[in-house]
Picture 1 (spheres, one colour):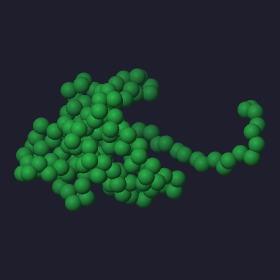
Picture 2 (cartoon, rainbow, N blue to C red; picture 1 turned 90 degrees about the vertical axis):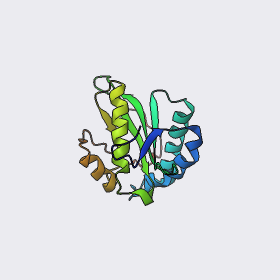
Picture 3 (cartoon, rainbow, N blue to C red; picture 1 turned 180 degrees about the vertical axis):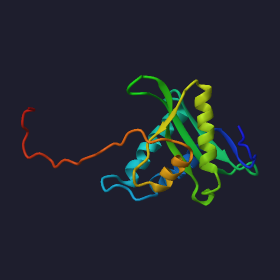
Picture 4 (cartoon, rainbow, N blue to C red; picture 1 turned 90 degrees about the horizontal axis):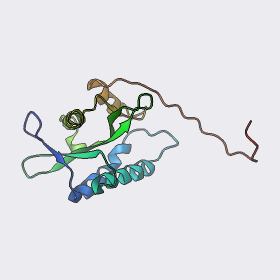
Length: 170
């Protein structure tokens, strides 16, 4: 699959792409993280889902790699899985990871990868694509807003102090 301007090739990931995929994991925490999250925590979770998709342990998923046609330099990727809507149980695509090399930012790579994952979803008969983004990740939120993604839910989180003793539930 090649994007419209033919300066970029997007193809399914291969097992030999794993070192490249893992090398971009630090990019996924390259924004002001909430105090209760760490870059290692994010990288470890994404590392596992990448491996599961690459090895086929994660069914109904795809990793698409963006590379430059001259020399095949890899510059980004997107991983999408199949999820089911909480309310309707309808299958849809869910973007788990989108990462672009810092040197390739602002060149339309993320947009091309999102277009490719939307096409993957259409071919599977899905009617929508979902994703999660940290509230503090302004760069990613701006991208998704510009691509026409709508905010649907907002997840709240409250940390709880450790209980001194166990009490029975009310």
